[in-house]
Length: 67
Image 1: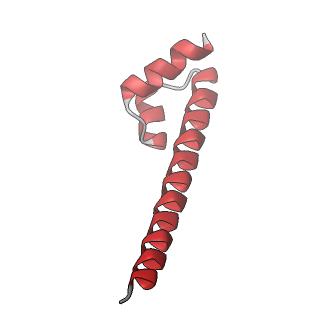
Image 2 (image 1 turned 180 degrees about the vertical axis):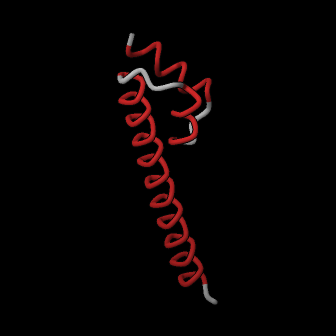
């Protein structure tokens, strides 16, 4: 593998990683939005945690933002 091939492979790997991180960030934002909606409906924190996978601490923090 010459230098150009290595550079291309590295660039492609970095793009794949950036794409993965973007997808992950989008999913996290979606779970937080779902948690906010559930909090607005007075859903129990443990159920929100079970549905979204967010920690109780994160859910409680989100709760302070909507009150």
